[in-house]
Image (cartoon, rainbow, N blue to C red):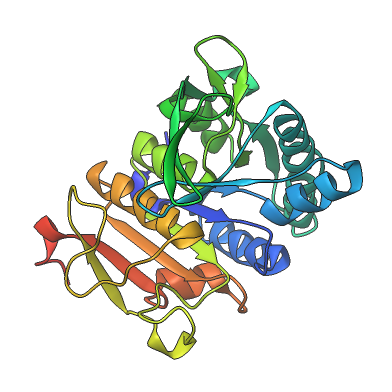
Length: 284
């Protein structure tokens, strides 16, 4: 059995985040007998491969301003190829070079990630809200925690990415930040670290010196409380995921800079933006 107090879930993408620095930190954590699960996306890899294959990439913007990738049939194929065939081997081989035994998985493997297919989406197009029905995306409903416990108990580092398996047994795109939150919740992780190409959550997205050391989110409403900024796009999704993890009783959630040396270790020692729920404002 693993000790949940020593379990860390790290989420990172490939845009601006150094996979070599992340691998260095995971190796250091493993030497310290900490268990680690690495969840990754790979927006840049998906975009690059789509461009090479001539597959147009589009975004959907929800009425609340959160943007997501429009995943038609061709984009779903590109996404699976890019994450499983390009991004994941990069992380697994970097860990192997540091003596860390890692196993690469998508949510399809052994039913690791189950999801409910979204039948319709509301999106804003030219100022009007429309219904989109041909997007292959879903919402995580279950994590095969027993599989991850088995791998962690064997001393392995699971390296996980979308897609997930929908109820019709076909793959669906799921947001990697939400995947990380779901896994951290299912495993009872002590800390969720989300690395990004930013020092943390910024009060002014144009000014990196405005990093917020702590951010308190409302337990239900999307806008954050305590003077939190209005954010959209990738950071908006990270705050949605952070809220989900906190509601799932993950004790600590940090959004931190993945561009620096020792990004995970710095996040664990207080750098970045620590995120809380309004009901837990008393937490220091």
